Picture 1 (cartoon, rainbow, N blue to C red):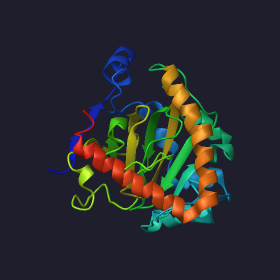
Picture 2: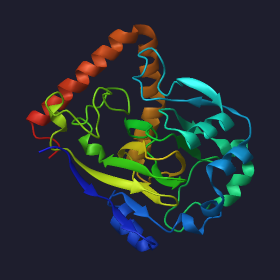
Picture 3: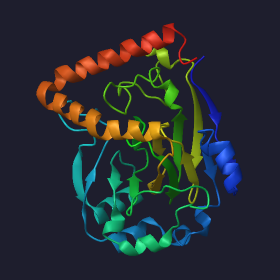
Amino acid sequence: MGLFLKPIDVVEDISKEDFESKYLKARKPVVIRNMARQWAAYQKWTLDYMKEVVGDVEVPLYDSSKADPAAPINAAAANMMFGDYIDLIKNEPTDLRIFLFDPIKYAPKLLEDYIAPRELMGGFLDKYPNMFFGGKGSVTFLHYDIDLAHIFHTHFGGRKKVLLFDYKWKERLYKIPYATYALEDYDIENPDFEKFPALNGVEGIECYLEHGDTLFMPTGYWHWMKYLDGSFSISLRAWDKSPRVKAHSLWNLTVQRNFDNIMKRSFKSNYMAWKEKKAIQRAEYALRKGLPK
């Protein structure tokens, strides 16, 4: 069997009515080709331009190594000057990536180069949207965003591969308890179904982004990303109108995250081993029961 991956819907442009009915209310991802082509960023934003306007700022870097059980989620693996990092990803493959960095804080004029798609929906967050940079071959681990926002993820400067999974598949993806990421012992691009049988039959969406493409990811969607070239993206986030989703987001950001960090500090590897064991047990139970229905 294996994973069932279907291609993502792709549109050149879309009306508010079609976006709401086909994608926002339906909680379905889509790639919008022309949205960012109307931005100044479409022409201006290159790796060289970002290096020029952001300047010498030390940035945290992340790799694909398994997380330290005692460290808070999103703990950096290393630090580097931003300009040196840009030179690195321009010239060679690297596992290092920049995650949740806000270069616009250091170069506010970048705010003039993009436009949040308020013609499609409201509720946009963040004065300074997050940006993400990766070297060729670097991978963002399988996770969903803790705040459960809708995301418009626009890519620049190269190509990126994305795998997407509806939130309902969380147990079958070996979700780690009290966290928003999956067990890090498997490769979702080439899974070992003998070792991780719950992945067999999981349904997802495969997507490839090129310069200027915008991916709409609905709230709670699991995503895994691989940089096929040294390149970068910006994520514009918007709240879901549902009170239930907002309450879940608040729980994740306060109670769940704080509890998890306390347990990590207190019990370190023993706590992580328990969480991994529980993720496997829940995945195997979901597989036996044929979940999700």
